[in-house]
Structures are given as structure tokens and as C-alpha cells.
Length: 495
Ligand SMILES: [Zn+2]
Image (tube, rainbow, N blue to C red; front, side, top):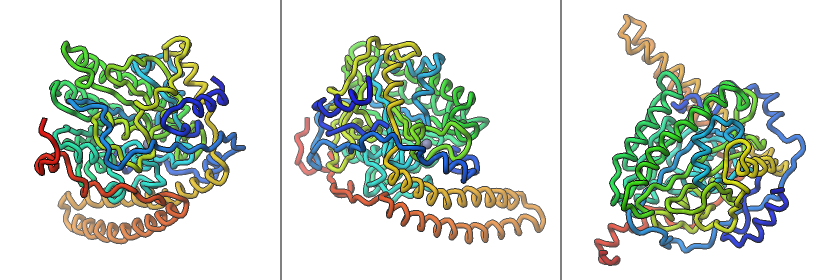
């Protein structure tokens, strides 16, 4: 469908959002700028040639009261969120080997989404996915983890745990930032599985997949579970070889095969006799941003390949299979998950539950996501309609990304130096080890001060460019009574 027709469909669709978003290392050590930035060339190429900007419409969340139960589910509920970092949907769609993706898309609803107007770095973008608000609210601007934003803007883990401690919440990840995020806030995830790099990121992702399948198989029909399972290899290959490289394409296919392995477990679980739809797993697959095609910064700017993203939603029991949704956004992921569990919807969400966006579904001539299929073609058309933001936004966000990169790179270099010194210190070598230990201490002290100073400067620049400029309207979660507390106070009927 042409862009104009899509815009018309969005404005007349009658959905509860006013309009769609504009189409448009695992140790934190090496991400998201694994390679040193070749600044001048890369930065110029990251700035717009001539913006073919679609109208910069803002999504507005459906009005909901601060503490209103979404009333979608009341019984045991299971939701699996699979994240694959830095994965371009056009690379998924271009390769007939990506059958894991295609099989899932053929039994789900897929949206080609865009981050235009928001920083395309992992920290800010996963924060959007896992809180339901954009960086304009969270204030997260780079990949140096800071727990403070998640007190103001609770994570999906916090929101589910605050609602009902009996929901078993888990993260399985090989990027420590996300494990730290899941541990942040007043109500952290129940289970926090972190995998450090081994032989390769593909091997580490395989460990994540195995653990995810174990967790799926271990759930019982009458329990409620939420799992966030994260894959890093596509983004890493993009940084080392470029998004247009064969290595990147190979990583996409590896992740596709991993998704197939996980979906085999999900489909086996869901086909057990006697399960209600709520007792079956609903699955969401998403990415945090795309990738530049060449080696360089990788991502962080506003080119269409960097802002390109996607959401695939396979709701248990839904009859919408192999179709496209024109209104999906990555900011909808957390509102969707809390709504599936029947947890309260925040009034200050930027997203809405995907379950409310039924009128923006497009049914292609055939439900086939593989190359040559009609679903493949309509999604490709959507990706190709995305453009740049206005030039002011483009430059503002480029300044923010560069400012945020300074403390990040210093921190990466510092960690490498102190790790090396500490390894000498640990070897008990006469004279050398005590000297190495003392030097590591001094380097850490001075370097740490430089990191925090440059991070503070970057924070000011980020704020001046709009990050974190919007305050919450909901109270902090710790002051919201939990279901347990309400039950104890006799304020809720015991069912
Ligand atoms: Zn990322």
C-alpha cells in the first residue's frame, strides 16, 4: 500500500491512537560502538541527504485512568517477549533462509515500525520497549546503566510484580545492561539469568535459547509467567562487519533458527489439550533499532535503516494470522504485556496495548512472509516508506548521541585497562602484582571521575535536546498498593 494510503488508513482507522508513529558486547564493554567511530565520514553520512520526512505525527496514548485494570485477563497468563538487538526487518524479509521468522509471522500480526525522532541506541530503545515510554520521558541517552530512571518510569517487571507477586517474571539475557534493568526499581524480576560472552555471541545466544526453552517447559498451566529472552549476535556482527555484510545476514538467520527452536517449545506447550487461551503462551518479538550498512558508528542516528524496527505479536487464541498492522510501535510492548496480565495501565504510557489496534490490520493477498509472498511485499513497502525526521530533530539527536558516546567510550577503555591491571595483580608476581593493584586503583579513581564528569555533561546536553524533559503523571510504584496489600486490607474480594 502506498504511504499516502497508509496515512489515510491510520487517520480513519478509528483506533484508540490518534495516529501511528511516523513511518519512517554483551558485557556492556563492547556495545553499541564496538568499533572506534570513524567520526567525520560516518557522522556526515548519518546526517540527512534531503529529508523525505513523513508528517511527524505523534502517537498519543489512549486516555486511561492512572490505576485502571485493563481487564483483558484474569486467570493464569503467559507472555514471552523475545528481543533481538539491532535487527533490520528488511534483512529478515530478504533471505528465504529465515524460516523461523516467517513461520512465526505467518501465525502472528507483524508491524514494520520506526523510531524516528528518538535516539537509536540500545539503552534508550530497550528502555522504551521495557517501560512503555519514549526517551523524552525516561531521559536515557546512552548505554551506561543508571537505575534512577526506572524508579520514575517502572519497567514491565516492576509493573507486573507490583500488581501481583505471584506472576513469575524472568529475564534471560547476554547484555548486562538489560540484566541490570530487570533488577532495577522497587519490584525487580524474580529470576535474572545473565550469560557472559563465551566463544562467540552466537554460542552465548544459544545458551540463552536453551535456558528460555527450559523455562517454557517448566511452567504449569495454572501459573502466570513472563519471560524476556534477549539475543545480541545480530547487533554485534553489525558493529564488526556492517549491516550490509554477509556476517550480519548470517546472524539474522541464526536468530531466526533460534526463534524457531523457541517457538517449537511454545507450540508444543500450547497444543496440550484442555488449555484456555490465557493459559497458552502469547509471544512478542521485537528489536531496539536497525543498523547502518557500513562499518562505523553502527547506529545512534536518524537514517531510515537505523530507525527501522518491528513488532511481531502472536496472541494466543487470536485469529489474526499472517497479517500486517500499520499502527504498531515498539513503545506499545509494555502496555500490551501489562494488559494481557490484567495489570493497571499507566496514564503516562506513550504506547497502547496492541490488542486495541485491531482496526489498523491489513490483510495481504496471501499470508506468506517469505520472499515472493504478499505479506513480505506489504511489509517491505512499509519499510521503504520510512524517511528522516525534520532536519532540526535530526541534528539535535545526532548531538545527543555524540555527547553520550564520549563517557561511554572512556568507560570502555577504562574497563579494559583496569581489567588488564587487575589480572596482573591477581597473579602474585613479586613487585609487579602490588604495583599493578595500586595502578589499577589510581586509574579507576581518576578515570571514574572523568567518566562521571563527561556523563554529567552528556546528561545536560541530552536534557537540553529533550531527553527526560517530561515528568511522570503517575505516582512512583512503591506508593501504589499491591494486590497482596489490598487483599490483606480486605479491599478486594477473595475469589
Ligand atoms: Zn541495540
